Image (cartoon, rainbow, N blue to C red; front, side, top):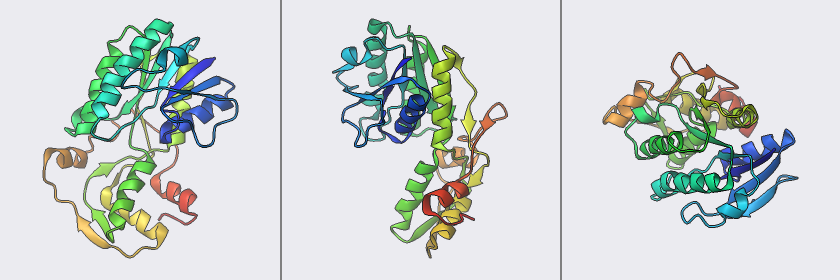
Length: 260
């Protein structure tokens, strides 16, 4: 199958590209810049979601599109909401038969800018004429690690009752690749990591894995965002599926030391 992966050089997108290529699909990587190390058998197409440049050519003859684009900057709404609208219009012109979208578990429950943007993106996708599949996942291990690494630069280890259920990005990529092969499925079952952990527990796992000596930095339970995350708004409910390995195992694989 000819499949296009938008954002195919990012944390998730590159994993999706590798998975689809391993399954024998012809994969087009749609990004502004070419990948540094292309996956064998894939082809890069330069595109811009904001302007729509390059999309018509990149989507010609494509059967399915996986949208793994991400943008956490000031232009996130232009890239993710306006951009997906532009992408879907190009897909309709190219007669693409299936759009596969990734979103975030609980994004509509947390009044945070990026999550509001993802909620708005879902609305665009689910009301577009292009047949779609939507998968929601919890935060990737890489995001948790990025947050904790940022604090560690200041010799701090965040502490708090905020709850997360981080998931292995390759497991999410595999589900997206499977969704491509399954065809139009609508909203599919949410996925997340195997265990729910507090920010304190996650920070302790990283501190132990890297052998760091850090000062505790309590996160006060102030504001709706913090309270919602503390109340497990970003974790799976009873209908979700826990998959793969936890953050401690991710740390062991990343840094070569036990994360507990």
